[in-house]
Length: 227
Image (tube, rainbow, N blue to C red; front, top):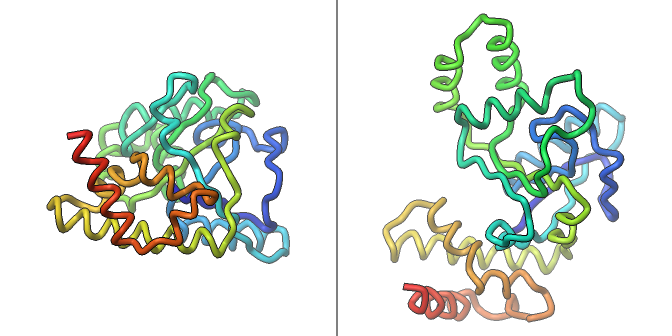
């Protein structure tokens, strides 16, 4: 999976000690698979520091979500468990993480959502009403790398190489949607959790130099074995 971090500078080395406390999922290094959101964040933070915005791109080995050696928490969407977890981590009374997860994935409490969280905490809105509002909120995404161990799953990608991977992935996802009659999220999950994508995301395999149709054929063979 290609993921992005928006800032006012290019990221070469990740230093978790510089991470801010009281974020959605606690202290950690945050990325998103939605590039436009990283770009928007980069613009906002660059303006704050009077710098130029920059989006750093990484390859994330998503299969790690399924490996037992990582302590993982995933939220598929805005829900009560997500809300309780965000409220826990955003409590200003604590400056260290209140969990022991390596990786956490889920939606973002952006400014609009954070304002409503404050309303909920102040008793202005009930939890049920707030959760009902979130059903109509724009789709967001973030992954928090909370430990040094988890950072081994991130590899800074070469811009030219990564652009090939993105284009190939888009074509494959589009065809999966058509051939399997599924939505984009389902198609993306199939691709990004496949061994085929693991190989595609590894620059040394040179798989990205092949036509997307050939890579799609490799994926089809893999799926037939699984099924």
